[in-house]
Length: 388
Image (cartoon, rainbow, N blue to C red; front, side):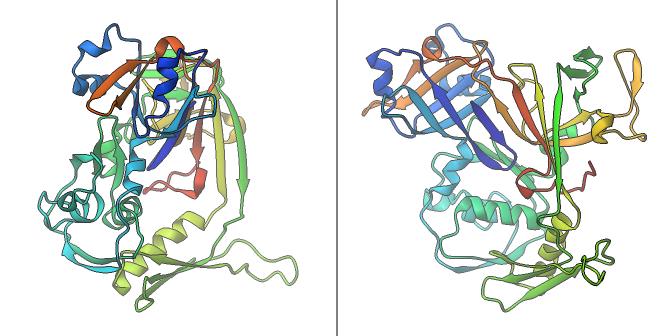
């Protein structure tokens, strides 16, 4: 099983079927790279490693095995951003999100290029500008991954780590063109392909709404509680069952990088936007055995299912010779089985050099439906609200 998650490392578990001792021995090579390609490759050792990464649909970092030495387990490459040396509490002078120099947030406080703590991750597509510089603070023990999430939110960016180990950080539409025009449709009415839209076959939905985290007021403090900001709902649609007065729910949060009242107010408003409505968790399953060539975590897709209120009369499209009115929603997570249609390779350090092994003949393939997490899994909301 391979799970990819929007703005999170995700994880993988690859089981082997009666592998030889040579392959079992590889499970001891921690931090090896599991490389998955959309189709098996003959003689992958003849391909330059950079080219192999360019073909990959997924790369994971191996961190665990079972006692029988027949599994590879680990996380996506973003996990490497949790491993740098713990930072000390420090104020950060005014600097841009990224400008290619040693004065930017991404270079110094995320990839830490100047201190050689980036664990091989490098700069990819990053929206850079010397303007919009912000001061801030990094708490002791904060990982580069936590700083990346906080800084991206403050600068209005999103991030992802690609299979080749490059970090992209940009506005949503730059990283995910499907935000404007989705290219996949999930609907119970059938699969197939129509013009520029791929229909996912045999789709089924499981949906749940809850108010567990409903909030009416959010207050944000900076790390030393010298600055604060608050945002409150203009009106509260719910009342308590005893005297019918408006429900009051207050949430206090701390920003690790905010150091002004304005920053704290911005964080408070963003947090209130996550919790001011019921949380809808929708899981979509489809009979396809591989989806990574058409849908990735972070992409937007069309979803049409009237029974689950997943439709929009303002959004007509033509599919299968008829006009339907799908909703545009975001995919926050993808869980994909290990399919015989793909290729699986391990690049590891043998003590003196990197070497590549083909794991494909030994993989225990799974007859596993692909599932997509839509809506609000893990209590995260897209930067631009998408009502579903």
